[in-house]
Length: 510
Ligand code: AHR
Ligand code: AHR
Image (spheres, rainbow, N blue to C red):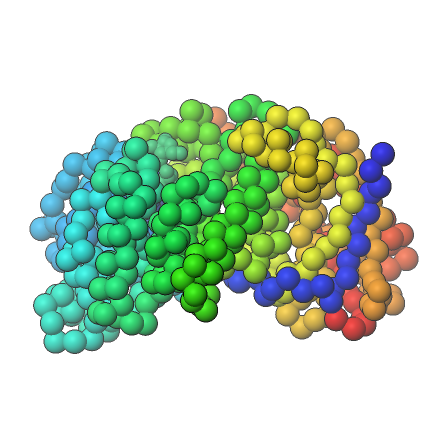
C-alpha cells in the first residue's frame, strides 16, 4: 500500500509563477465575440451603450484577473483579413468564414479588441494568419498596431481615431498550421522555413515584440522540426492540448497528465535545439490553448458550448496544477476560451452562468501566485485507461508519477510568509486523510489558523447550468472555511472528487 503524505519544504523553489499562465483567449468562433464579450444590441441593458461590451461578462472576467487575451483565433485566423475589421462599421464587408463555416460581420475587429483589452487591464496577443494571409498582411497589421511612424498603416490607425500605438507585445506565427482542418495547412519543414522569414521581418519592423512559434502538442515531430529551425528567432513555442473524458471521470481528471508530459518533452526539444544552435537564449512554452473539450459533445461548428460538471472542474484544477508545477517552463497559458466557447462562462440574453470550471480557475488566478515550490506527494496512482493511451504505458515505468490520485501544486506567497497548496483528490469514490508536514527549516506560525477554499459537491455530474440556459442553483462554487490553530491536527480529510486550496502561515528559513 502506497503511503499517503504531503511534505512541504518551502525552500525547494521551482520558479516564480508567471501570472500570464492565467491568460484567456477570444476567438471569432461561436458566441465568444458576438453575444459573448460584444453584444451591442442586448435588450436587457447588459451591454455598455458606448462600447457594446457585455458588462456582466467583463465583470466576471475581472474576477479571473486575466493578464493576456489571445485573438482573433484559433482556426478562424487562417482565413481572416484583418483589414476587413477596421474603419467605419457600416463599410466593413461581411465575409464567408471558413474555419467554422459561418459568416463574419467584421463589426468587431482590431480596434474593438484593443479597447476590450484596455478596459480589462490586459495585454493583447495577436495570432497571425499564415493560411490565406501573406507576410505583407502580417507586417501591415504590426504596423497598424505598433508603429509611431508617418507611414500608411500607422496613419490609418490614426485616421480611425487611435493616435497612440497599441504596443502589442505578443505575436504568434499562425495557428495549428499542422492540422488538416487548417486553411493553409503546411508540412513542418515548409512552415519552419516560412515562419523563420516572418519572424525576421516582423522584428525588423518592431524589435520590441515577442514572437511565438506554432507548435503542435509538444510531443509531435512537428515540434522537434520547427523548434530546431525556429529557436534562434522566437521567444516562445506554443502548444495546444484538449483533454476529453469519453464519459469516464477518471479519464477526465487524468487527462492533464498528457500536458505535463508534453511540457517535459517540449522543454527537452527546446534544450536540444539550443544545443544544436549553440545559442544562449530563453525560449519557454506558451500553452495558448488548453481545456477540457469533447468535440463530439460540443462540436466546433456548433459553437462548442460545453456544459461543464464537477468532474470537469476537478480536471481543470489538475490542469492548473500542471502549470504551477511547470512554472519554470510554462510562462503563458491561455484557457480556450474566455466566453461561451468551451468556456467557464456562458451568456444568455438576460444573464451569465458561471460554470463549475470558473471556480478552480478563480482560485488559482487569485491565490496561486508567488514562487512555485516542489511539494513531495506520496499517493496511490490511477492504473486504468488514459486518453491519450501512451500515458498509461509510460506511467508503468514512471511508477504513476503523473497520475496520482492526490494531485498537488504549491506556492510560497510573494511576501514569503505563507504557503498555499492546491490539492485535488481526483478519486471518484474514496476520501483520503492525508498528513501534511512542513520542514525541515520551517514551522507553522503558532496560533495561526489554516484557511481553506473548497470546490466540491455531492455528485460528479453536478453542474451550474440549467437546461433552459439560465443560471441554475450554483451547486459547484467556492466555500471558504477557517480551521483554528487548535483544530489543525496535521492531517486533512480530502473528500472524494474535491478540490481545495489550503493556506498556511509559516516561519523559518526559505
Ligand atoms: O479553441 C477552439 C479551436 O481549437 C481553435 O480554433 C483551434 O486552434 C483549436 O483546434
Ligand atoms: O481538436 C481539433 C478541433 O476539433 C478542431 O479545431 C475542430 O475543427 C474540431 O472540432
